[in-house]
Length: 277
Ligand SMILES: [Zn+2]
View 1 (cartoon, rainbow, N blue to C red):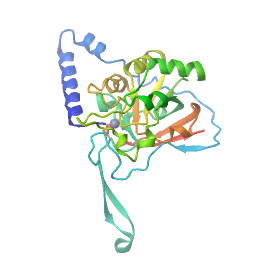
View 2 (cartoon, protein in one colour; view 1 turned 30 degrees about the vertical axis):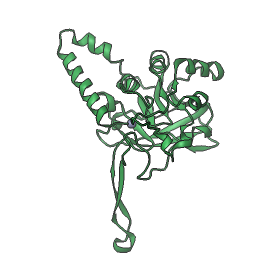
View 3 (cartoon, protein in one colour; view 1 turned 90 degrees about the horizontal axis):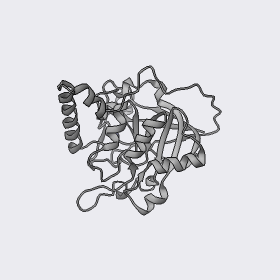
View 4 (cartoon, rainbow, N blue to C red; view 1 turned 30 degrees about the horizontal axis):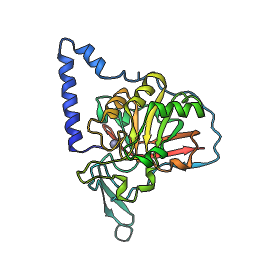
């Protein structure tokens, strides 16, 4: 996600941090404001053995009219060369980075890693799927909370080292309808996301590389402060939004591979997300 309001908020926050860095109490205040980034050497990766019986695509096809956080179209495709006249087909894309199934790189909400700087080891990990469909069915503003994570662990065991934790709210059912954005008369959107207490719990107590949602934003639709983005991304952990097919993978046991863009300086971008079962 990112709309003008959110860009304004980022600019304000970054300039506040510049200010804090220069202030007498700068170091302590900055440290308190940001969770500790993952040390570049401290990659959240351990060798794993894979036996693959099935491959599931967690990526949506991306047509120009794919729903967007801001509501406006974010992709245009122009044909530059075609087979008949030129001997080959070639298109040019004009694309907002936060379109379709896409990554939020740490740099999206901080001055940490851009998409190309994320260690490749941090793009592979065991998949954890937290199913909140029942409460999301009752309340479109539902959140994945610390309690949901603890409930998951009682049933499936502790979140494994280096995991990628996904929220499955069932919102994939609405991807071709206005309910995917679910904007009310005032333009406020209503869809599920992560709660701040859930990501604080993961940061403090588990070793997780990335979080994924099947909605348009890591924060739920009505959020105005983007608290989850600001807590999670500055720690050099990434997010993935508009993830598909979480109903086709087990709650525990799959491995995710994220093919995110390696465009230098990118804040994220459309990604191919693949689950191996
Ligand atoms: Zn995004």
